[in-house]
Length: 187
Image (tube, rainbow, N blue to C red; front, top):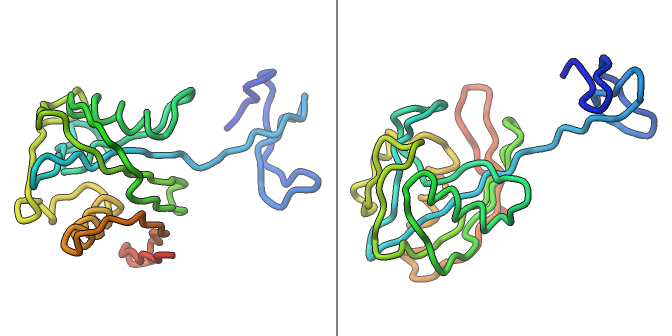
């Protein structure tokens, strides 16, 4: 950040009085510009014994598979955002959505919230951000071509719950290691 969004003057990166973190502060009007994590929301859209996956048409991770998900917008609930992202990426509608998992990913300042929901009539086709969409069983999922670690982790716990016959809500932190591997801590 270089300039204040309130008055247009330069900002400085300082620790404001009474705070403990570096923040962008306007040198003129002294407004503190907080930067907070982004919320990503999406859905495991289920149809019979399959789930809906999207092949990304955009960066990052163009050409790899993911669940329909994206950044939450202002003036929408988390659940509305998950349904909107599913509609945008896969031209699909979901019903009966329930929270499935919440993952904090501190190294990229994101919090993922993913829901389970019923894919209405099993219908989907690629939206503007998807090259293709597909309904897949667990054995059909291209595990080596998944776009994001958080999606792979979500699907791992999804299939573990499915085998148990009971779905619970999962909470965890995905921590990037120095060798670009990941550790997942559940709580």
